[in-house]
Image (cartoon, rainbow, N blue to C red):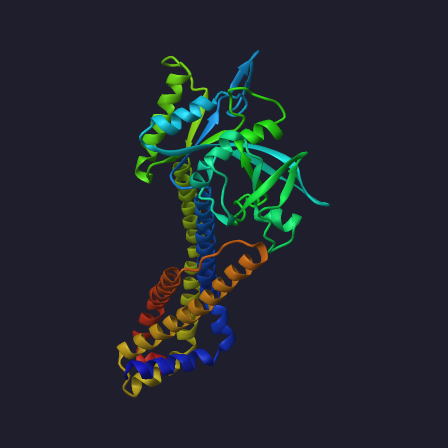
Length: 410
């Protein structure tokens, strides 16, 4: 009996008990579906994390001002302004591994245009900021170095601000808006950045020169100190660690910190943070996939159980087949094909279920999902392996039945 005929007999046998066949494959369906859905969620989470870090900038460092300690009360990084404008200039000009550095002074303020107003984040910075943060312009051109030095009253609007002040699609370049009470001329509209992983709208922001920010938006003057953070872009990704070391050494020298004395600043490498986040997400994905794989094993045990019942129910049929010339390997192959068909059927339905669940979650919760073809193939291959592995014992039992005893079986 050839393989095609064996498959035909196996399918016919399975169709005789459709409900039982589907219920038997249910464990495989759930297992494969869970594996595909869990891996899709994990891959989507990793892609989301990478997107967030890409939107923040490439090979970038964040320099935070120092911690505070007074009267026994201690504050974390950012609680005390310790970075100066001279520190920023030194980082920009003295370090060979640094391509650019820019401050980010941030505050919330009301922006007015005619009768419309909108509360948004106002960022004071320098032109290098847009290179460091990978921020391009959708309309117009960003302000220049001379604008930044002179404190020109120019502003770059985020897309969300444009939508709320003028309406979607409007070109506001050349218009005048007021930030608090100071008029600013719109010189550009920033390209959309979307949202961060925490739901922060990057586009709900306006950018003005840092000098203008200190004069018009900042509540109090800090003199030579920077009231925010500094972003530093390394010359290349390979030089990020070197840039981190050079920035640290430079700031320690400028702040006259002795050996053993704690830094009054913090230099954070976003590449390391991204790598750590990616590794955590990957580990979680593997854990979820391993848990889901247990369902496949349980499904395999279900297949073996039903196949053993099937062998018992069809003992007389096996005896008749052997009596008319079927060889033990034909019986073995028939039951193996039945088990394999069950597991593959369950695998295909499970793959459709997993992809469907992933798309449903993506649509319902706006989560990014990635259904990878290699994961689908791997899950189907594993389900086939489960079918063969757990179907082997019942098939061997059927093939070793004594034909005389089988024919006498009632």
